[in-house]
Image 1 (cartoon, one colour):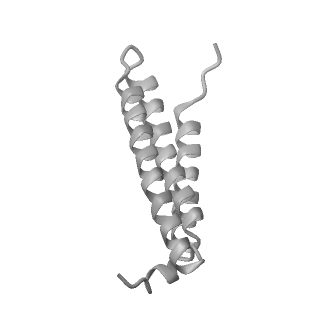
Image 2: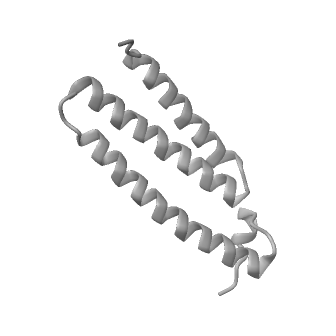
Image 3: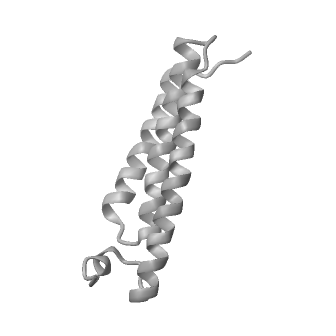
Amino acid sequence: MNDIPLTHILFVSTALFFIGMYGLFTRRNMITMLMSVELILNSVNINFVAFNKYLFPDKLEGVFFSIFVVTIAAAEAAVAIAIIINLYRSHNSIDVEDAGEMKY
């Protein structure tokens, strides 16, 4: 079986993480920011599974952590989409700068 070296997997994970950070810091659209957070969480999941495979191949702790992170990400996405819908209904925009002007 042809195994991929750990360094290649970590390179892809690091690239995903920094693409997510770039998107989070440079975008104003809340949907794009939510997708960037999901990229960051997925890069962490890749790290969990990769280190689990290479350090402890007989155990599944990394996989269980990844399942937990996916579950938390789904809950976070549901709450974030509800906030985005509420913001759009009140301001007709999903721009982050418009969120700062919300009146309660």
